[in-house]
Image 1 (tube, rainbow, N blue to C red):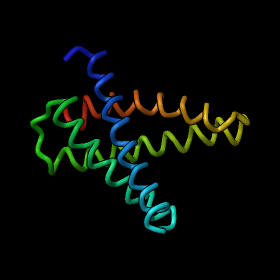
Image 2 (cartoon, one colour):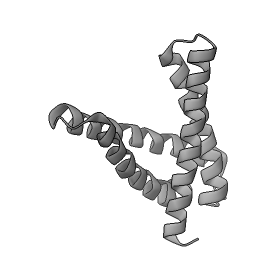
Image 3 (cartoon, one colour):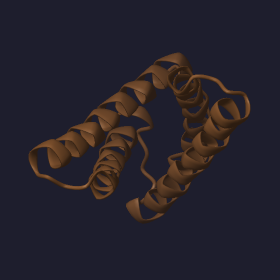
Length: 124
């Protein structure tokens, strides 16, 4: 698959995974009376499972075993979490940027880093 098409597919999978995460978060908080933190954690895990399955099958077409690719995907997701924390702290807390534009920039930057790691290491 050409790299630009693969990046677009990766971004699409991310959008689907995010939609699953937010749907569970909103459903549990608004419809189920859950507290937001446990609800978002459950949504995050569900979105992560969706991202793993879709990335493995449709973006990277990997034949690496689930035992190996799964923990590598988790480690890469944690890297993305750390990048998000670092950049949001820099943009919002240090530089005083508005949080939504900072989050958009952070998401795009983290997406490219995690795409590269997933392409070469997780599923490669």
